[in-house]
Image (cartoon, rainbow, N blue to C red; front, side, top):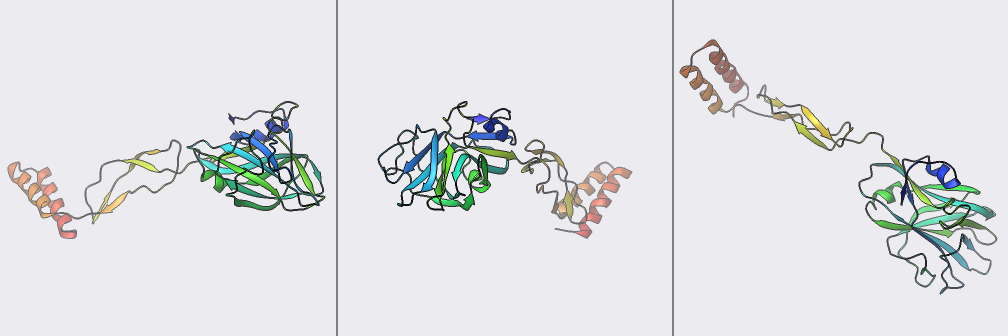
Length: 261
């Protein structure tokens, strides 16, 4: 689900800061001490490590549309409560999983760290820059995983997308800020000018994407004047003598002398 700007709930107010909000599609907590249990229906999800070493991790999944012109992409996760100041490592995975079947035993483990030892604030959204990750996953699904980096008694409680008051009021999302002016990548040109001084030039007639600036249009190239061009204009002058055909022939002779080929 892709949500445009609006205001109201904590989620809506946070989303209003962005051009596009990519909502979480699945979220679930897994617990090491109950490795076969699924907690996908829980409204509250914990990131913590108990004093006996039990671990609580939280998984979030997002579907990223293709064709986005991204300046910045930020992961937004809401924490409503903490015991102490919890810090997290955030990992990426492209492996599949589902909210109502995820457990400690079957969780994806091909994890790549994308944020290291970063604080969770509360009660508020914590924001993490994941621009590179999102750009690398355009048109596909990927997940983030939060692991605690502080042990007992430190913990953080996160709201799931299904939490009420109302439903979705505190859900996680990725906020997208568009690049305000895209760079031009494609150009339509005028015809090359006549070769002069060993150079031909042309102008840009149009460019894309719409509203773009800059880019690297090719507006000049090296050139030379072949003898065949000279002979052709001399022939035109002989066939139809006039001041115009004579001047054309003389100009071409001059160009040939400057840069023959």
